[in-house]
Image 1 (cartoon, rainbow, N blue to C red):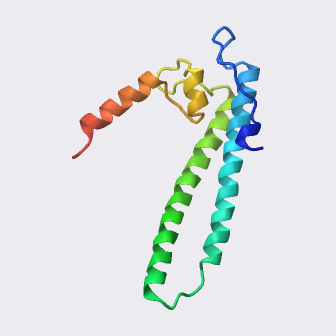
Image 2 (cartoon, rainbow, N blue to C red):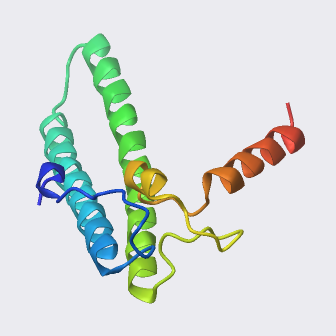
Image 3 (cartoon, rainbow, N blue to C red):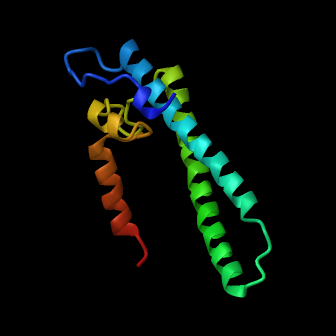
Length: 138
């Protein structure tokens, strides 16, 4: 299922929060996102295998190694993202999806629609980022 196949969600606050329809929407959205990432990962592997040819020219080899390094870093980020998507799917199953891990309050549907792996409300996320800036070692 591609992202564009996911049904749209009416961000109507009059419905009970995280009802069955909303859970189904976010589950479909997360699964589609994960499928897209996995498809892209397979394409990257094919590309890396194709590029695994020996280049006699030193500049070509250096360029290929740089490209490979960038692709591998992107794959690592994708692997971490898949882990977060799987955690979100687990939260949907156990009934904790959509609730802030710090406050227990509902995360806004708009935020979840924009970032379905969110675990913090906007307020909690902003407070977390402020604390990070204060304690960050520059």
